[in-house]
Image 1 (spheres, helix red, strand yellow):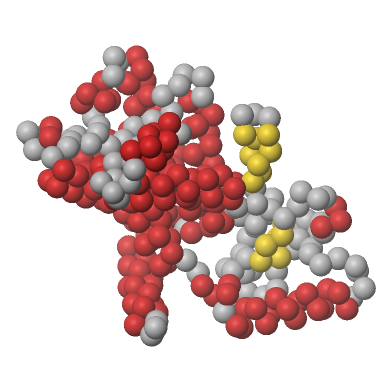
Image 2 (tube, one colour):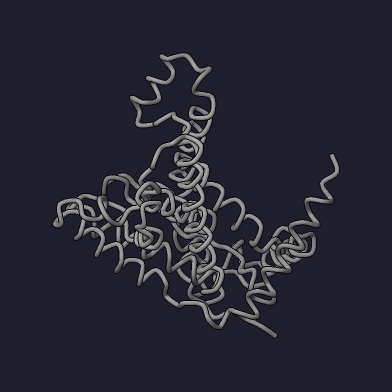
Length: 304
């Protein structure tokens, strides 16, 4: 299979995106997640203490939009990530942390575009579901936040979180579980008519709605992640030149007789200073600089 046309398409897309960033990057909203968290908090208050005000008047309901409630195209972004009073503060903090890390890694413009593309794709999905299936699916920010989490897992997969406040688990394993959930939702929904009823019932028992409507909704979340992040990420880290540079750096460290393979360029810690330390190269720094997980997203990039 000739993949050269695909590579050319990616390169052209990346050139176009970089040109767009140079031209309009100064208009990007910095610390965007801070403002989104405020909107989430307002949406939570309206939903819980306003007798479902968000669901009734602000969610992405295409049937009501066609009746003139155009504001829903914008206000659905206020949908809170959690409807529990007990866990809302934790959810808001978690998504604020995710958004902050992504913005520091990608830059404000790229993060803005990621959220904007997710917003537009949600509107498109709601329109498709309404026109094709005749269902007004009330979109909130659930799938948009899942798309955000998948992007976060690709750059901080080794980070550990406490599942149920007790069990330490790496972010990448949670992402794998989400990918399986989405895959089953999409496959089950698209092939609902040919799957045995006992399989569909089994999927429903574990919380998977295997219907065409939910399949389209889940596909939107993955599409935003795959198309935007996959086509705009920095592929220099897997180039032959970068691989050679890392190999030479590793050989240089071992030849120095220090007995360590990794060393943070900021704090100087090595893998011997803690089993929980994870080291990564920074693709934006010019030279052989490696950082621990605490300084990977907070250090000042080294340029010539």
